[in-house]
Image (cartoon, rainbow, N blue to C red; front, side, top):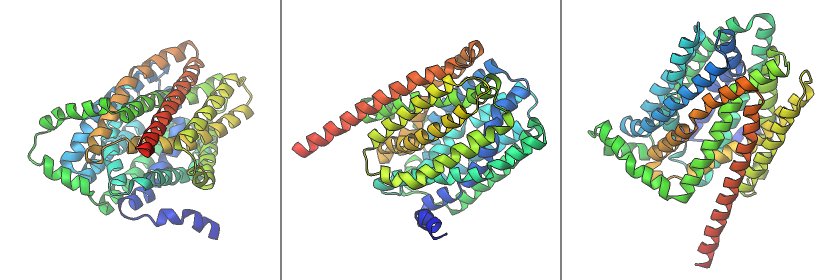
Length: 421
């Protein structure tokens, strides 16, 4: 017990917006952990097959792009708190309810469009999280956000037991209704206890009385800043490629391992939920402080090497053999623990604090815009052979590694010039 208190003491020592962002995260993470492993199969059982799944992904990415463009403007215009609570409810609570009562492709299309507006709320949420914090502590904040979300792993057996007792569709409907209630509670609690950031107050005054159309036109200058700043456009390329890879993996993993490799669908929560989350959580709690002593870029490269090893193993796994899938999930979880918080830190640190909301929003818009065709492409490739999208992921990992290596060299060169000067 003393060890547990010592491990989690830094989380409870957080103050201000960061405290409530972290402590309410399980209210989102728990229901997401329960329903997400089955979501693609849920659509499949309701008549939405590979090509239409790919189409839903592409439509969602296009809406995410448009939402991201609006996100920075709305966050500045209406404030971080109000923007966050309104769009989180629209993109998650309402979408979950539509998914819960879905009958066919049309329901998933409408719900997917609403869910794809999540970048607006996410942009405001991240501003609330990091704007009043010291830059040196941003990485630790993202670590704790991931840890808080991963604590949901302890609830994953619920969906496993439900799937063994009832059929998939009614269980998913119940889980999605629960998700709407739990997530809504998170959004409301965070809204009540969070406070507008100092930069948020400044932007509220600056944008008061300014039409949204004019604020959108001001994005031209922000775009120019993104493409003329090496650190920012390198980050843009990296997060775009990673977004494509994650979109492919999240959309087709469940179909591949169940329909191609013969993995029982009711055990997906144990594989993707409990095992993956438990390994990531243990990794964060045990190794993250040690890894913080080393270069962020070297740790990211190690994570990408592990990803490559995991996907090679996945592609070599024969049908009907479960043990390699367990090893795949273990390696994949370690790779994610190495890469994800450092990716978020790299994004946060590349921005001008005075323009964080608009820079982050436009980065997300550009990322999603460049990535949007790949959901449909992956769906078509999966119809030919469900291994092809995962083969493509291997190439994407290599490209990400090259980008990280270039950024590492650029940073080291900048430090050398500073020391010489």
